[in-house]
Amino acid sequence: MNKPIRLIAIFLMLLFAALMINATYLQYYASGRYNDDARNRRVVDAEFSRQRGAILVGRDPVAESVKSKDLYKFQRTYPKPQLYAGVTGYFAYGGAVTGVEKSQNNVLSGDDSRLFVNRLIDLLGSKGPEGGDVELTIDAKAQKAAYDGLTSLPGKVKGAVVALEPSTGKILAMVTTPTFDPNKVATHDFSANQKAYDKLNADPGKPLLNRAVQMSLPPGSTFKVVTAAAAISSGKYDASSMVPGGATYQLPQTSGPSGLVDNEGRDCGVKTVKFTQAMENSCNTVFAQLAVEVGADAMQKQAEAFGFNSDYDSWDDLQGTNGKSTLTTSNFPTQMNPPQTGQSGFGQYEVRATPLQMAMVAAGIANQGTVMKPYLINEVQSADSDTVATTQPKKLSQAVTPETAKEVTKLMVATVNDGTASPAAITGIQVAGKTGTAQSGQDNVPPYAWFVSFAPADNAKVAVAVMIESADIPRDDIAGGKWGGPIAKSVMEAVLNP
Image (cartoon, rainbow, N blue to C red; front, top):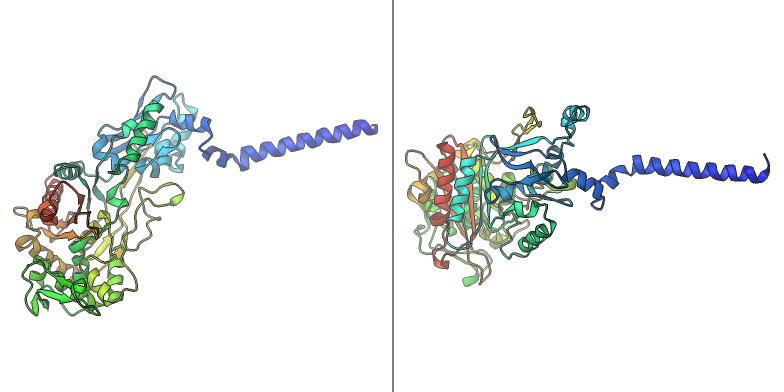
């Protein structure tokens, strides 16, 4: 072979080698990255055209794919949009996915490894690939009771309700207001889709925000449940004890009105007061003194045992892609000085909690001190409704001993029977509860109303947290018991009387 032909042959061989290397790189090493790239319209179109699995509450779909007469073959629909939007989120074109639609995308799209056999059958059969179904832990009646309770409040309501099954951690209700209609975002009319999203995103009420898990606010006096648990755990008190009382209390290392704690006229004794009376009347002076006595470190340890300052990345059923949680961390401040510790005792200073977190506090006391890991996904099912996986309850922490939980329960029962939490009382059933009205710290922002409860008190089936961020309620009339108590009561009744 002469030299020019040999050079051309070598050059062509190099070209073929380069093509083979490039093809191998694109089809093997880089395929996943290109498939996941939001700019890859073929992949997006294929996913949007697939028969996606349903999100179920019991046997009823709250998100499903129905046949459509357009390019994409299936339209994602939400039969009860306002009621479940905060949980389901939405599945829209171009990778716009939120809520359970996002956290369970692999199952719903059929790509989950647990659905491999089903994918293989679909491939060999005549029908196209189908996604698996996801059954939620939500109790339909409890969800509706929570939604009806919040939306019946006057004006444009911002708030949330979370209900848990204390013994397992199942989320029985999760409602957030204001809510939205995910059908308008999921529509195949992409012009209308974008307009709907832009309007929701610009809404000052933030309807796309799930306030149940994505907003933390001062929990106010509902946090006194944690302070009471810390005080009893110290070994110095039980529910029948006398505790430090008084009409006012000057925080340590302070002087003047800025460091003065009062009870807004409630009867909290002179020097001491019964522990039950202190909880019934929600005495700030008592719980500030108890927190200072317990100390900052013990208060932090107790709060964290209930879930404050937690990293949710490993257990969020609403988590986003790449394992990143969408949940907001509930904060209990560290390295507090004595006056800050006193303020934390009644849920102020820099204490911040989500409704989910305060539901966990109530559920932990209800479950003999054991906090269970909250979860929203009950079952993963194939497209043929065969069970593929069932979530098993997991213990998150032992927040307090069963003996301490029993004593705190006595305090909370007294608060429903004879105190500020009486609006949650249910005839024939012993209810444990605690109210909270938390100052926002801003002159133009009204206080937040909170309520936590569980029932039956001696063998709880449901624990509830209600948070009312704002409603058309006069500032002087805002109270957790008056407005949150009836909502918690209706949710508990929905679970106890199915």
